Image (cartoon, rainbow, N blue to C red; front, side, top):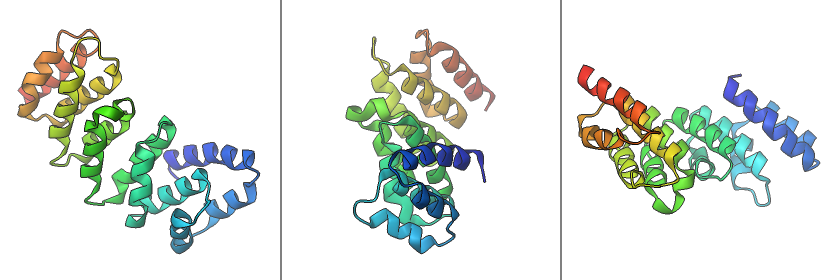
Length: 193
């Protein structure tokens, strides 16, 4: 059991207990039946905690039936759900994942929820990653933009990806007190690469 799964089950055990469903929770955690988990994703009136466990387990096992649920969780208002979804999506190996993460990261109406899609794009190192991070960062460099954490994740991601196309944006981020240090490090990686 990896640390992310342990964290997920600890959190969702509390949700299941609060809903009066501790036995259902224990059954879901114990089952080895992927078909049962897949049914949970599509059955009506299943609680979110149940869908999250099923999607996480299937996603980490490489079962693409979890894709849609994981993408919805990646864009959830609860950061813990986003972290778990990103973890499972990174292991899923579905070719749709980079496009979905890029769409979430670049959606200007959902910028407040873009942190985990940005981090996932960095981890995936897909062809969509650098253009999506650049698009997002460019929008967030406007003076007074409140989403500096997302901008910082973009700068850090562009540094890790070390793509020369990002140089002008990284240089533009240098004067920002919250982004400048990470931008300098990212530019150093470009020079070293």
